[in-house]
Length: 228
Image (tube, rainbow, N blue to C red):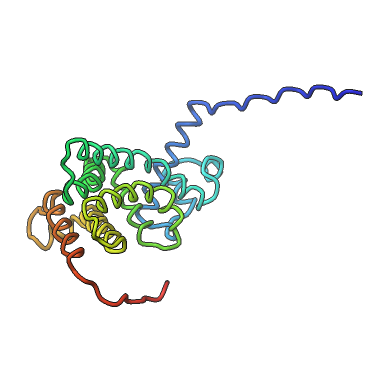
């Protein structure tokens, strides 16, 4: 006796435009709420209130809080990575790879997105700063940001072939940290300066000089800090 052919599986129905709009609204709200209070300071209820939707709808579109946090990070990661890689390739094609040019390719797209007047991008970059400073989110950093970071480190290694990998990594992280400081603490720079201050060119000058000084420094014994 031969097996009867099984019924063809029903095609999964595509989300409606209304459902997609609701999801984007929830992700926008989550982005703002997480950026303000971090993961621990945010609640699903806060996000529902920000989005002006029922709590159940947030769960429906975002799952639990951790899944929603990951979805928010995922949503814009590819955009910023592609902008960085394109800028790096343009510098490479122009045969203009210098330390400053490589750092510019990774700093300038981020700063321009964050400070371009779009509150959602500013919230996203502030959220990335939270992820970058908290070890428990290392899997998100590795998945969404390390591939592009690896391309930057490879370009820097080609430019500085005698440099040790750990020194290149230090310089890269210090530069990105300075970038995030400009974006998240512009108000503090202005307050200390007594006027509007801080820009991409000043940041790049600082990062380039610091990066090259780190490579020239022989280094000291590694300091071990307790994990928190």
